[in-house]
Image 1: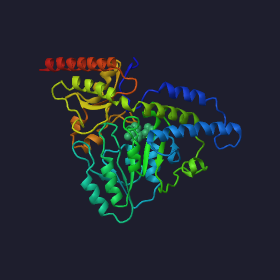
Image 2 (image 1 turned 90 degrees about the vertical axis):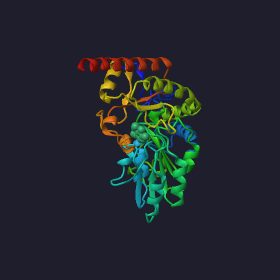
Image 3 (image 1 turned 30 degrees about the vertical axis):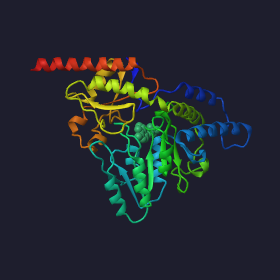
Image 4 (image 1 turned 135 degrees about the vertical axis):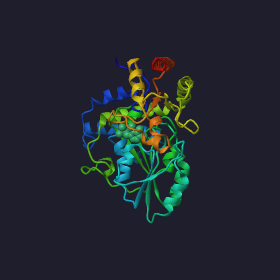
Length: 372
Ligand code: PLP
C-alpha cells in the first residue's frame, strides 16, 4: 500500500502545484539559454526570473545565486571550489559536506547538537592561513538550529570563511541575515516543494570560486553545463511560495507539537533537540525498545511515511552520526525516527500517525506481555 499520510518532508517535500505549473510551462521553452536568438532569450528569461525568486528567498542580489544540480553539488562547490588552508566542519553536517573534501576536521557539538563555539575559536586560532568553516543552519535529522551569527563572528574574527548549508532551513526560517553572515550558502529545491535535482549556491561578494565542473562558461563561469531550465523554473516557483508561507511555521509547529506530545506520552520516549531552538516542522524521537526499521515498516503498513533519522540515500539504516555526535548511545540512536511535517500536512495526518504509533506500541506491549 502506498503511504497516503506523508510526514517525511525533510527527505523531500511533495511538489507544490505552483512548481508543477511552472515546470509544465517551461517544457514548452525550446531554446538554450546561452543562445542569442529569440528562443534562447526565452529560456534565459525563465532562468533569470527563477533566479530573482530564489534570491528573494535567500535575501540576496540575484547575481549571487549560482544554480546547481542540488544541495549536494552546492555543498561540494562551496567546499571544493575554494582554496583554503584547512576545512572545519561541524560533527552534525550532512554527508555532502562531511565528504566533500578528503580530510576535513570535525568540530564537536554538545548534547543538544549545538556546535562548540569555544572549540571553533580555539581551532581557528591555531590555523595559519585562511580556513573554511562549514556549519549548517538547521539539521536534517533533529531540526536543531545553529547559532550562525555567533559562528560567523568567530569565523570573521579569524579571517576565515563560512559556508552554511541552509537546505533544510530554507522556507522554514528567514535567510537574509544568515546570507549576510555567511560567505556561501547552499539551497535545494526539493526540500521546499520544488523538483529534486536542482539547487543553488549563494556566493558572497569577494568569494573566489573555482568551478568544480569544467566546461562552458554558464552561471558567470562558476558552474559549467547547459542550465536545467525546467528544474530551475520549478525551483523559482517553489521559492516564491515558500517565502510567502514563511509565517506558516506556527501552523507546522502546532501540528508537530501535537504529534510530539501524543507520542512522547509513552513512557521512556526521548525527543532529541527539545531543549534548544529547532525547526518548527521536525521531531526526532524514539520508541523505546523498538528499532527504527520496525517502526517505519509498521507505520508504512498503516499508510504513514516517516523516516529513520539517518536513512539518507542507501535506504539502509546506519547509526546516525548526528545522534552519535550528540553523545547518544547506538541502541537509543537506533530507535530514533524522524517525523517532518510540511506545506500539505493536516491534523488528519497527525491523527493517523498517532493512531498507527499507538497500535504498534500496544502490539509490541502485548508481545512483551506474552514473553514475560
Ligand atoms: N544538506 C542537507 C542538510 C540535506 O538534508 C540534504 C538532503 O537530504 C542535502 C544537503 C543534499 O541536497 P540534495 O538532495 O538536493 O542533493
